[in-house]
Image (cartoon, rainbow, N blue to C red; front, side, top):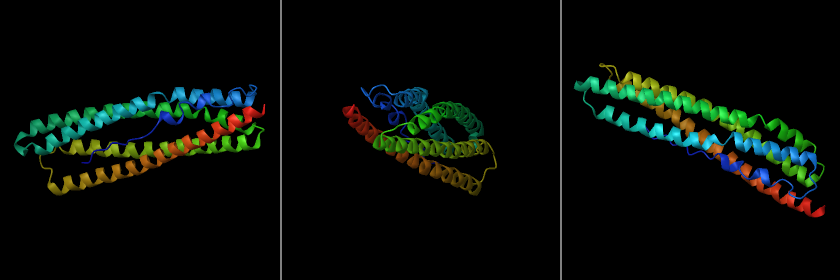
Length: 222
């Protein structure tokens, strides 16, 4: 069973963007609305990174419990069963925190409509182009997270099946090996989707910086 460690980048992509939109640029409503929506996005996504740390803490705990289960001989079935129950309880908690993380992203995503509508009303050609690129990056990032969430859900279920099966007195090596292969394959997909999410977060930061530069230039024209 491999260490999971999703290593996802989250709030840094949105934090700070709320202050970069046309400071001193006449307070035009489209920019103001986009600024406010971005601020709300950042606020609603605030718990994302916290849940990341909590999930990884439970992952590490389960990894340690699994190692103890494997090291325990078949003559100590009660010990294995107890360790398995602890791992299942940890997985259940992880499931709860995953839901909290997802809710945070879903709430943040609700502001996307306002951001898009505000970007569409921008008149300056260069600034509008940068705003549209930022919107596209946001859309890709949210879609990427949704896929990552689905894969992580599947992997978590595979963990639970594994912990439950370890309680079986007649669990053979081949069956255990097969279940481990399924778990590792699931987390391979999780890591793959996690990398994609990180890439989209990086792209969003780049578009954010380009938008900031265009906003500064537009501000100097006023």
